Length: 375
Image (tube, rainbow, N blue to C red; front, side, top):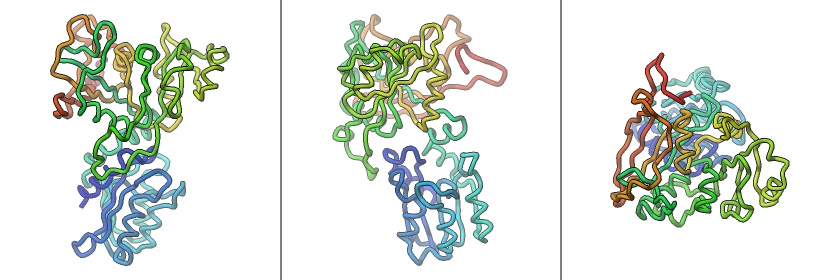
């Protein structure tokens, strides 16, 4: 039943931000009497939808839910109170809420009402639903995914910058889905000037959504542009919200006024060695409530995220082609010793059309050891 609840939660993978993806199943006498999942932020949570489906059959029933029922009033009433009022007999929870301000309160409310509570069923599987929400609650920062499309010889573009298209149609469709599940899409000024991308979510290019709720709008696009070189005519400014991070001294310039006139929101942060402080950027994004940020950038900025230890996941789409030794690398990193190499573990490998998609996570050095650039 918990595995079914996790399946239901995935239906909200494109639509629940900034809330977590949650699923719920209600059973009585071994029979499923209600199911639900959180569809969009501001709308009823998974438990409320499942209780509505169950109706009077919820009394005395067992509830399976992927995340601890909330106990606080937000845009919707507390789910824990709704479960108590429905008279359920037992609640099985995959994991407690990681928010330190509310963690455990929902479960205590249920227990004080005489409801039997079981924790930790398929906890690891449930955590995979919401890596961004969990990291944000625990650290105050977003979960950063680096997306790279590369050839067999590790090149993302020709030396001239030509890059359309390294990968095939199926991989590009998969990237549209990846954008849709992200709270924001981040790039650098180099990519803006070289490619003039829109970096939008295009639902008509996503293909079948497999029971998922459709995305509700464009996520913010974020440009790291220290000297404010973004042209006011850039395509990225034409569709939805855009945030531009620059050196604080640029905020009062005429270039800043021109970009604000196009709707851009500017953030000034400090610079280190002529580069924006990525730690400061990460903190601003976390303070803004962003959970999962997709980095679609060139090798310099992607390498900076890896080198700073800010990359939580790497999505590598590898095409069965060679682009030649003069092409652009996947990341630019200054590494001179084998001891300083950046090591990754392949978490998932999947064929996507003619291309291969690898999802990798960084290897954390043993306690007491460090690698260059890792925070």
